[in-house]
Every structure is written in C-alpha cells, then in structure tokens.
Amino acid sequence: MTTLNINGRSQAVEADPSTPILWALRDNLQLTGTKFGCGAALCGACTVHIDGQAVRSCVTPISAVASGQRITTIEAVGTDPVGRAVQAAWVKHDVAQCGYCQSGQIMSATALLKQNRKPTDADIDAAMSGNVCRCGTYARIRAAIHDAAKTLA
Image (cartoon, rainbow, N blue to C red; front, side):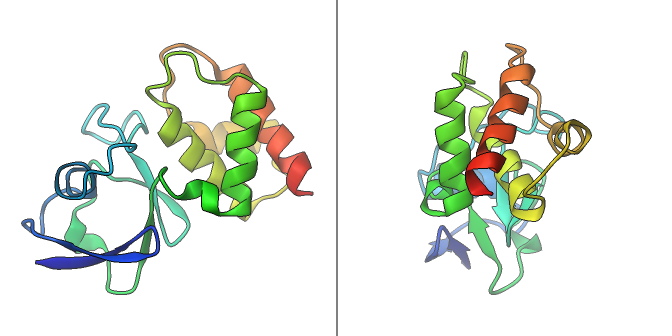
C-alpha cells in the first residue's frame, strides 16, 4: 500500500511500487483524464504534475514520488488560476480537435506558465516539444498559451 497526495487529497493506492503513476491513477483511483498514449514517454498524453513539474506518468513509477510530493492531474488543474487560464484559452482558441492529447497538452502548458509568464514562441516550442498532437493543432496551442499568458499578466 502506497499513500500519494493526488489533487490535494491523500489517496491510498494498492499497487506494486514499480507501477507507473498512470496506471495507479486510471486503474486504482478511476482518474481517467490522464491518457495512455505510447507508454514510452514520447507523446505526452500522460502528463501530470509532480510538485508543479510536468512529468510523464506512463514511465514514472509510484515509488519515484517521495512522501509529501503533490501529484496534480487534469481533473484538478482548473482549481489553480494558471490552469483555469490555460483551460479557458484552450476553449477560446478551439484547440481540441480529436481531444485525445489535450489533457497532456494542458498540463504541459500550465507547467510552462507557472515557471514563465511571458514565454516566447521558442519557449513554448521547447516546453511543448514532448507533447504530440496527431491532429496538428500546434498553431492553436501556441496561440492559446500566449493568450493565457496575457490573461495572467
């Protein structure tokens, strides 16, 4: 049994310590907003925050989360002003097409804006480079991030 702080709540997870966070979230806690994409940390669909840092949950075992560290998922990112601004910009710019990758995209964008409130295009490209959108909405993603940054300014 492992206890994790997920979305501000202490959650008991009955799983092997080597279990990826993704599967603890989806299978043990029924938090299905975090998506399985590639299983190799290449697509970003599984992105969550650990203490505000974007992390690929498909390859990060629950044993890698130290006691007291906070995991935030897409289900709770909107409770934070930065996450709310990103989600609103996503809607405003009609970013989602198929939507599958969007929870990971939003998590990465939120982590970026928490660290850098005035990102350049190069900053956005670097921060989002680990997130793949098969529908190719990259221009809308960039516009939404710039818009969220203006909202937060």
